[in-house]
Length: 199
Image (spheres, rainbow, N blue to C red):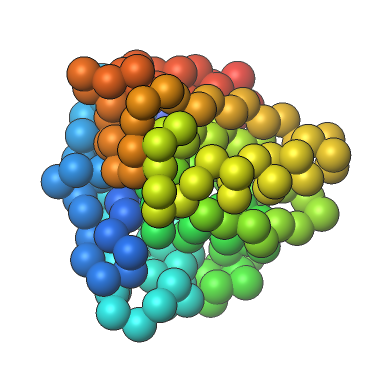
């Protein structure tokens, strides 16, 4: 993990970059997110996970990372209440899986679910009957993870009474990252505000 230290005792966020479980796109979808969230005073960790073997092992790595932060919260000087999970593409699937089923379901400790899950451009349909608040962003022109695939999950979450905010940005494809120079620009700040309201 790469640690971006925020205010002493501030909550933490874990960012899982995308990469189709073939690589970890930290330069595009990890570090830039962390810089923006960290500017607002939060502690941010960018996860480097195992690749090349599907989604289960990376999600176990995320569970281990969350468990590590909880165990070492005093040394890291982070608050464990109200943490958030962020992910793009494959990383968003990991964050959503922990949000749905909990840290222990993937080999981590028996810990609270995140206060918010932030998902960027992914095709993910799995859910549980108890979901954390979710902030979801997609591009209208995404040919890899079409908006319709996420919209069906959002409909289900809303039916469950889950707090959801959804943004579909026009003329944007897959992998837009922070969205600088596109209609998606500014979404990280919006997602951070959503997290703040969910804690």
